[in-house]
Amino acid sequence: MELDQEFYADPHPTYRAIKAQGNRPTPIVLRTGMAYLPPGLRGWLVTAYQDVEFVLRDPRFRKSIDEAMPLFAAGTGREGGGDRSSLLYDNMANNDPPKHTRLRKPLNATFTARAVATKRRDMRRVATETLDALAGRDTFDLVQDFAFPFSIAVICDTLGVPREDRGTFHSWVQTITGAADHETLRRDTGLMAQYLRDLIGRKRAGTADDVLTQLATSLAEDEAVAQAYALLAAGYETTANLIVTGFLTLERNPEQKRRLWSDPSLVPGAVEEMLRHQSPFNLSLYRYVTEDVEVGGVEIPAGAIVFLSFAAANRDEHRFADPDAFDITTPRREHLAFGGGIHNCIGKHLARLEAEVAFDALVRRCPGLSVVTPADRFVWKASPTFRGLKNLAVGPGPRD
Ligand code: HEM
Image (cartoon, rainbow, N blue to C red; front, side, top):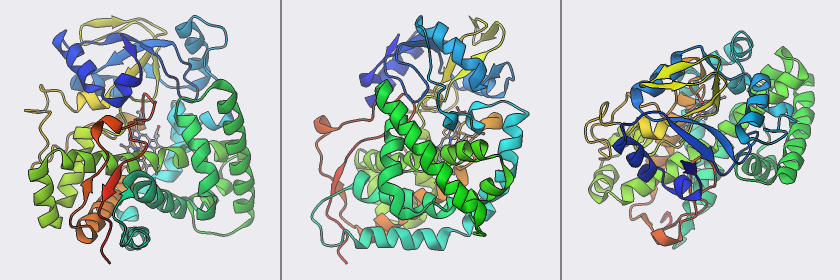
């Protein structure tokens, strides 16, 4: 089965076809690459909720990037395979214990629900300022004028990245997480690494109370740069995509939207159901398997590359009754939108709070907000993992 732009725009027809065949692990070819994933990569796609959970918790499925690279080469049948040239990729997301534990553990305390809750007031201010800038507009772009500026400002403030640098790193992150050609990818990973190296160097000399200073003073320089990249790249686009696809889902379920707009206390439940229903992290990052392992009745051979579909698992009818339905009053919290096992999303509490603050602000400030862009003009990001729209015109903007 080939995964291409049609799949990235709407993966559910493919998932329904896999389900109709028994919802077992399926051999796939990734037509579009991302970062170190070469286009043409062959692997396995795991879609059933219980199989996804099984792989997340089984240590025979590993992530070490140095061991995965030769497998990428074998998986494409080409010389070279994935691009490991950038040190950015050698972060917690692409390592196994004990290195994964060493990189992740010092950051856990920064991202607990309690620690993150202290940021609510600052986040509200950012949301208010972002909407203030749109006051009186007939239409605005929910992606570029609200979701991205808001989530970028929050992650910058959390990490200690100067907000005025967003214009540069945002375009590099877009290249790295999208379908860029090899040369552009090399150029932008190089620019990103140099930018973060300079920033980390300045942090080391300072005394700021932020995450980058913590990384700069506790890790070797290359490790600090790679960890900073992981947090920055994973730390805003997914949240922005949740806000946008969440709003789109409300628009397609007008009764749910009406209820939310008339009762903002429903926002936390709505965010949880958006996470399940939309799953902004469609496919997981890669894993590879160290020996033959049976998953859902299918033997996945040693050395295979494996992707988990959080989006498919979150619509598995063996786990969720009527899984395609969207109901903000009965959110299904057992979803896997943030993954699971030791690599579960470190930013999940931050992301939830951000989405809550964003929707609370939209509900209170934009009473008549509706989608303006017709569905046949939607352009989806070409990425197996980050599912999001490039633009979404909505209106009217805030009145005051
Ligand atoms: C709605 C927003 C978000 C979603 C849906 C999401 C989803 C995920 C998922 C599914 C994974 C696991 C991937 C895998 O196992 O292959 C993950 C990992 C990760 N996420 Fe998030 N994420 C979100 C926001 C954030 C934010 C705000 C941050 C930054 C603070 C962040 C940082 C990370 C990092 C660093 C990892 C790797 C963790 C590890 O390997 O130990 N994410 N995320």
